[in-house]
View 1 (cartoon, rainbow over the protein chains, first blue to last red):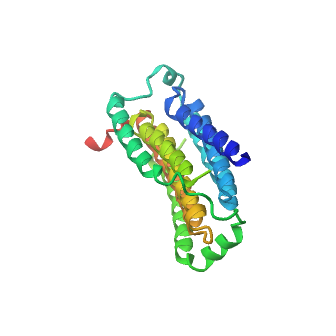
View 2 (view 1 turned 135 degrees about the vertical axis):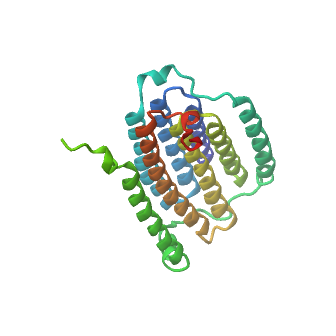
View 3 (view 1 turned 90 degrees about the vertical axis):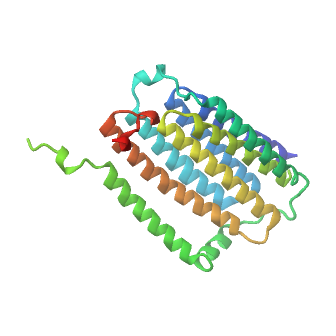
Length: 168
Length: 101
């Protein structure tokens, strides 16, 4: 009973935040709604018993990605943006594509409505750490390489180029 | 709660993110919608892990990798957006026609 209440409230937060993200006209409000939706997904992870994923979602997504998106929105925003439409001309076709994808996914997911949890959830952090350093050691090292490359790429793309700097 | 509920929630989040990625004009809005789709995939990974294979944690580990790569993607994507904005002073994708010459 408690699990159902937690699931439905967290699902409502996640879906409502997502709807606000795609429908709000003000990009600042939309990025704040993204943080709300990501926090709702973190609640879903907590409801599933995925404790390490819950902490990672809160730390990386809500605390990192949502904040950096808010920063960039504030760097790029202009007040004239509030009067422009934020949805392009092809929204009808996009609605059709989304309806087809939604119906297909619903027909796929419908078959699993009877699958119940086999066992109560156990802590997963130790098992994830062991898996990452044994079986998934090579992907783990590759991800560290990807992170270093992203760091260098972000610095490379966001600095001013040398010919922009006028000596004064 | 059954596995189907979580899969339906993931499907709903994915469809909303797909609609946003197809229709937003602002490039940051598109990036945010892609984040929603990543989250839908993560919900599916974690739910299938804990319902269908509760003894292992491979699905949750894959979701951790997805979160990490999504963080890297957002950082590089936003740096690129800033670089394009510095050149063309716009954040709307229909004005990003630099490669047409």
